[in-house]
Image (cartoon, rainbow, N blue to C red; front, side, top):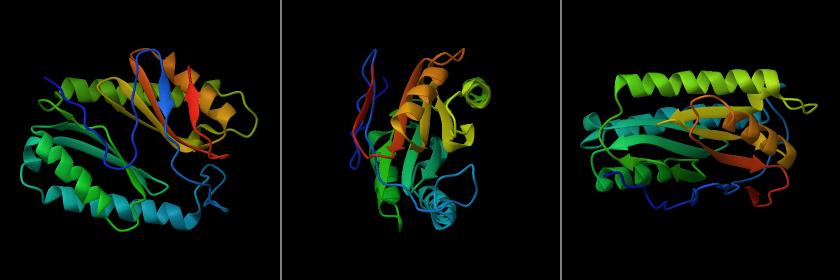
Length: 199
């Protein structure tokens, strides 16, 4: 039986037919390049957070029996994968929350057997398809596909990025219509910082 975790930091409930998102923070003033809206310093910090978090998780008892992947964006860490026990899932979340410069955590781990190689391969293909769809189907002026980070776990697609409401709607709509996608979960930083809900 699979069990979803209650998040100790930010909380998201995914309901059938709805894709709500809790907005995390603000927008940096400068960017490393035209295709990334984070500040140059934040990009460096996100890379450092990833390394630190991976090291901490690697030291946890039971880690070898889990399949865990992470994405750090704008100081917020998304945790995906499967763990053998709820306790390990909570320990992973705690380790991430206690990592320097981490602003929040989205714990999407489930208690389940590790994903098979076939399942992981399918998820990778879906991620590639969503990225390709975003690159070719975005129509909004000034909205680059590189502004949206994509991760997939068990055919569920997670989106992160610094976007405005119109961009969020377009990205979610495009991802929803990609073959193989069963659900889209957006964790966007909305420019105006308002709670954003897409029905």
